[in-house]
Image (cartoon, rainbow, N blue to C red; front, side, top):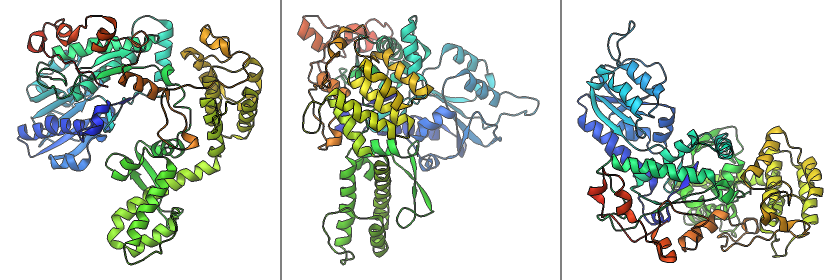
Length: 584
């Protein structure tokens, strides 16, 4: 599950990743260092918290704080009686059992594993049964120097993006299945809501909550989040939020909970911004990518590099079209080269080849660090373009853009018969089963289903396996019919018998001036609507009436004061923390 931090953070250097880093440094590293009487400390993590802390801090920062060793709680560990342990764990019974084992004498070990100063941190609120279990371990409790619910249960990948890392292979199937069956909230919905609480707590946001009314999953997550966030506030009297009476520099944000039905095309359509094309076409492990290290990028030497916010060039380029990226990198190299003794002649404006860049690098040793970074990204960009060419993505993108927009690059509305022939021809020559599924799914979603007489020929050309067939069938479960006119929703029936493509009408424009990037995601349209206060409260209601809703409908807004008054543990302290501002 991915999320995006609200637009106000774009103008400040203190984005989400920076905020998370500060929380770790002040609440964990500095606090433990100040309280610890031992010379050294070690950090004990589980699989989830390893990813969480790695997304924000490096080993060098840990070593600066006297942490010389990082270990997994699930592994067998050697004793370090002179070192104080810092545990940063997810609050699960499995982790707590391992924690208690560390401090419980046994036949094979009479003493605890570590020194007598114990610092205990959890990603989120600890359930009562787990808390009681820990309290029963007196050797642990007697040595406890800190017990903190840190409220960081997400990956801070970027300054404006967070990730829940919940297992993308099955999370949506669980959510959709539970929504179809009805009943109470699923474990996945509860987990998402709890993780969202830690995001908002870290950002000091007490947001208005809006959700897609037609989505049972979105409605459920919104309500669970509201309940759990109110519970969090009632247990944290010192917590403040943007928009309260003492922090009025910006107003309360809005948490918008959407369904995949709100934007089904974006994950399917090929996007050619640098970050998107790298993730789509190349092999990455997290944010690590392996590139060729030879003179022209084709040598046998391999090099690992990280594509994250610590790479300033990556941050600058990742949102730009791949064609612009190639030109920018070549221009940077050319500027450096041309300003130094005429190492390379000034020639035209064409992108440099890898061999030209390598030759320039050898002649400019004082620029090796800068040039090496430019060379890495030039290699990555060239690798993307190599796959782009080999797989015929230029032609494929033209078909995709015509389908999703309903028009070609000249603005002419396409005909179904013609595009069916192009899609069938393309499917027949594609070797990648995932690619064939994507193209067929784009057709189904963008055109509100297939015509009955086109279904068999397109399915035959797509040669889908059981996994892909199941994925196509599942589109119907989120509101996209396989065959035009079969859906009970009457808005699809008007497309039956129409020989022209469905022309997409959106009140937004692409920021990229390329034919292969004409598509504007539905999500952007939704965000534009909410920023311009045009979003329907009927389709996207709020848990509590919002200022905008009250103004437009005559409803008296509940306000922060009356909402908080429902929780007696914190109502008196911050009952007047209202603000008329509403921001996304």
